[in-house]
Amino acid sequence: METSRQTPPDDVAALKAALLRAEAELAVARAKAADDQAMIAHQKLQIEKLNRALYGSRAERTARLIDQMELRFEELAASATEDEVAAEQAVAKTTNVVAFTRQRPARKPFPDHLPRERIVEPAPTTCSCCGSDRLRKLGEDVTETLEVIPRQWKVIQRVREKFICRDCEKISQAPTPFHVTPRGWAGPALLAMILFEKFGQHQPLNRQAERYAKEGVPLSLSTLADQVGAGCTVLEPLIRRIEAHVFAAERLHSDDTTVPVLAKGKTDTGRCWVYVRDDRPFGGQAPPGAQAPNSNDRRPSPPAAMFYYSRDRGGEHPQGHLASYAGLFQADAYGGYGKVYLPDRKPGPILEAACWVHARRPFFIMADLAENARRKARSKTTAPVSPLALEAVQRIDALFEIERAINGHTAEQRRAIRQEKAAPLVADLEGWMREQRAKLSRGNDLAKAMDYMLKRWTAFTRFLDDGRICLSNNAAERALRGIALGRKSWLFAGSDRGGQRAAAMYSLIVTAKMNDVDPQAWLADALARIAGHPAHRIDELLPWNWRSATTGTAAAA
Image (cartoon, rainbow, N blue to C red; front, side, top):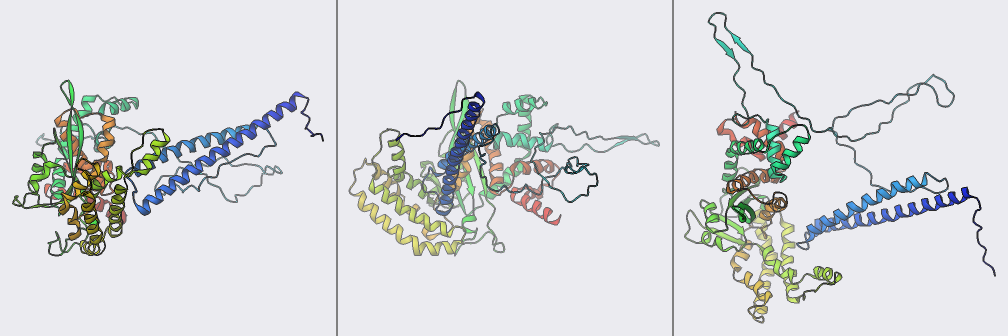
C-alpha cells in the first residue's frame, strides 16, 4: 500500500508562502512555550509566598529563595513577551496562521492621586460609511497611559526688598530666612535626597555627583560632603530623642555586624551595633506586677532603633551603650555582654533572654535535606543528615508555631498560653537533649549545639514566665539588614567619624521605616521645620508623631 504524499508547490511564490507559514507557526509555538514557562514560574512563586505567609519561614534560606524565584520569573516573563512580539511580527506576514496573545492578569487601575492630563484626539468630521457630515457625539472611550516626568531642578530666589525711611533715613528689610544649614545653599528636599541616597539607598556621594552632573547640575564631591556633615549636625536633636525613647523600653533587642573601615594602607573591621525597641508583639503592656509606662494609654509604644559604631568588638562598647538601662535584653551569646548581666549591676539588673533562632540554626545546618539535594544535583559532596538534629529542629519549630498564633496579644495572654502549651514542650525538649547529650562525644557538632542551649537554659526559658519576651531576636537582625546590603555598594566607611555619622543616620532612617513612614519625605519636612521649631516641642518632629500629624491633616482636608 502506497502512502500518499502531498506534492510540494512548484512555483517560488508558493514556496515562500509555505516558508513564511512555517516560520509563523514556529514563532507561535515558541511564544506559547515561553508563556507556559513564565506561568509555571509565577505559580511556583505565588505558592512559595503563600506558604511563607501561612506557615512562616520554613528555613533561613526561604527569603533568599523567593528573591531567586522572583528574578527567574522576571527573566521568563521578559522572554515570553519577546517571543510574543516576534510571533506577532511573523504572523503579520502570512494570512493563514492564528496569532498568539498571552493571557495577562487584569491590570489594576492607576492610583487616583496621580494627576491626569486629558488629550482629546481629533474627532472625525464625516461619516466613514456614507460621508455625511451630520455627526452627533455619542460618548467617548478613554485609554490611560502611565508616563513619568524627569526630575526637575530649580533655583528658589528669596527676594528681600529694602526700604528707606524718608524721615530718619533708616533702612528696613525683612529678616533673612532660615536656611536648613548655616551658610547653606541646599533646600530641605535636596538635602533630604542626598542624605537618604547615601545612607538609605547606599549610594556614595561620588556616584550621586556623577548622576547630578548628567542631569545638568554639576555639584562637586566636597560640596555634597559639606551638606552631609551639616545635615547630620542639624538632625542631632532628633537622634538624641530617639536614643532616649529606645533606652526607656522595658525590653530591648540587640545585635551587631561588621563594617569595613578604611585605614592607612589597609582596611580594618569595625562594628555597627543596634538596639531596637519594638513593643508591638505584646502590645506594649506590662505583665502582672510590672508598672506600665502610661496606664492611660494602652497602645503599644512606637518602634525605634538606635545604632552605634565602634572600631572593634570589645565588651566595653555594649557596656557603655547600656550604662543607664535596666530591663529585659534579647541578644546572642556574645561574651562582651557578660558584665551587663551581673545581679548587683547599677542602675539595675539586666535580664538575659536568649534567641531560639540562634539555637536552632546549627541543628538546621545538620538537618538540611534541601541543601543536600542541591549539592547532590551539582555533583558535590553531601553532608550527613543527623536524625537527632532533624528532631531538634522539629521540636523547636513547634514552639514557633505557638508564637505565631499569639503575636500581638497582651503580655498576660501570651504568658498564659505559653504556660499551657509551650511549657510542656520545653520541658520535654530539655529532657530529650540531656538524654541524647550524654551519648555524644565532647567534640561532636551536635553536642556543641546542645551545650549552647543547656548552659544558658535559664535565659532560653525566661520567655515562659514573661509575655513581653519574644522567642527570637529577629527584630535586631531586620534592622541590620540594610547595612549588610549596603556593604556591596559603599565597600567601606571612610573613617571612624564616618562610621559614627552613618550610625546616626541609620537610626533616623530605620526608625522611620519601622513606623511605616517614607524616610525621605519625613527628612525633608523635618529639615524644613527644625531650624525654627521650639526646642521643647522637638518630639513633634519624630517619625511616629509626624505620621500622626500628616494623617490628621489629610483627614481634615
